[in-house]
Every structure is written in structure tokens, then in C-alpha cells.
Length: 256
Image 1 (cartoon, rainbow, N blue to C red):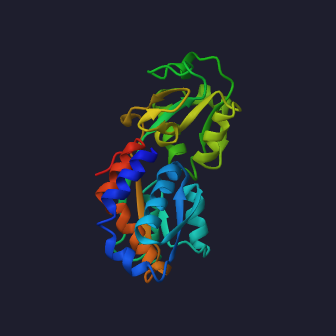
Image 2 (cartoon, rainbow, N blue to C red; image 1 turned 45 degrees about the horizontal axis):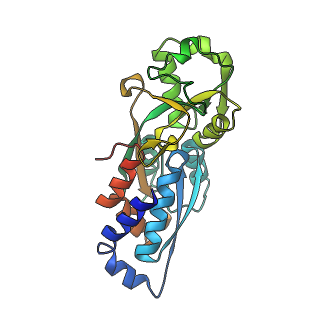
């Protein structure tokens, strides 16, 4: 993954050359609220932003629903990278964003994952007859990946049977931790959390078919307080770039 970031830096330097020169005397900061599933690519993009423009992206990670509430209560974020398209649209309609800045930066994939190699089969049959006591999901009221997990279990007709085994994380990040530490034998997380260099970095997994849940469309939007912030504008421009899209795809997202 470090090689990919270095390659993207080379391709993006010409794109941001003017911005880099302009920011040499003054580097600005953008405060970004990032849905937890996007942690790894966001960190890579923040590195690219700094090296190509001089601007600093300060990233906060958490559940999309919780971030929406914080933003409505005045949290000082400049950009919101959500795990759905509902909350950014709601903020737009409520007059809390810079008009014309909302767009879809990624479409996520849900995966059933265990830290144990060979535990999760390629068809997800472990959900029906596997020897496990705890199944982790993110809070479906706050995290779109949690809502997708519930939809998947309902689609498979397993919700009633699995309900007693569910343990719920406040975000998809906490859900991943439950599984990685063995506190839950398996659970539903974002594909991006278990990939490294385009390959499963450990354990075993079943990528949930897209038709088993509603699409996980992830939108980004610039918030109203950032209208005059050069760093926020540079961050949004970076997200739109072809190089950034390639990086995001490498983490298992679909990107147009």
C-alpha cells in the first residue's frame, strides 16, 4: 500500500503544483469527519494532501449518524465523509453545506469476517450452522454498514436465530475491534477494513452479495463553515482526482 501511495504522489504532484506553491507561505487545516469504514484510505489521502499542497487534514473517525448529530450541534468540522448518502443530503437540505459540493466518493462493500483462518466459508453458510457465540455488527441506527448487516440477515431469514448472539459496536471501527480481538468470533464489517494491497490481510471472509442489502452509497460534502477554507477545497479536489479514485478502489470500494 505504501508503494501505491508513493505512485499516486508522483501522479498528483503536477495536478496540485500550483496549489502547493500557493500554500508554501501559508498551510491551512481542514477538519474532516470520516466514517470509520474509510479510516485507512482517508489516512493515505491526508498524507497525499500534505505532500502535494502543504495543507493538513485532521481526521476524526466515527459513526455517520453520530457525526450528523455532532455537526448539527456545532462541531467544528469542515468536510463530512459519510457512510451513506442520506445524512449529507439532509445537511444540504437544512442549509448546513456549501451548495454544489456533495458527491458520491465511494460505494462500500459489506463483508462477513473472522480473525480465524478458515472459519468463514465463501458462501456465508457459517451463519446458519457455525459454532460461534457472538456475532458483531455496528449500531444499525448510527452506522450504514450495521443497517446493511441487519438487512442481510433478514434477507437470509436468519435475523431471529442470530439476534441472541449479536454484539453491537458504536461504529464499524469498534465492531472490527470486537472481531480482531476475539471478543466476537465473527461479524459484519467493511471490506476496506480487512483488505491490504487488494488482498485479505488475515482471517477468513465472505463478501456479501450486493443484492442482499441496500447499496452502501457514501457521499462527501463541504460544510458551510469551510466555504473560504483553501485546505477544504484542496481536500475535495483531491477526492475528485483520478489518482485518489484508484487508491479508494484498492481498498475494495466501487468508484465512478
